[in-house]
Image (cartoon, rainbow, N blue to C red; front, side, top):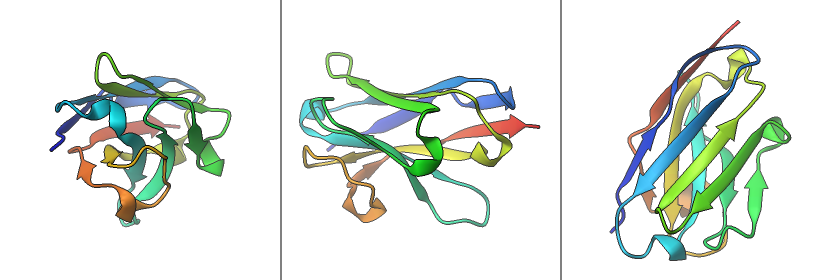
Amino acid sequence: QVQLVESGGGLVQAGGSLRLSCAASGRTFSSYAMGWFRQAPGKEREFVAAISSSGGRTYYADFVKGRFTISRDNAKKTVYLQMNSLKPEDTAVYYCAADSVSWPSNLVRDYNYWGQGTQVTVSS
């Protein structure tokens, strides 16, 4: 069982930065691939970024490449999403998720555990 708690969301102007954190409980965090997803009002949840259990492999949606960076600290049981050059269209609730395999996936259905989400609002 893994519990996930996101933090770091907020209101930022376009072009600004935010760093999201996702703290995990449980002893097996280092064996889970982790992902970030987002959901805007009226839209489906979409993949943002994922990282392998070791942190050696990352995977990004095309619309965030070069702007967002996913990382993890297994000793702290935390995964991060550094978001730079934010745009109004990045406004959404951001969720972290854990996948009980080591290889990252971009599919919602592959993830077993989800956090409650953190709101990110980018003003123009």
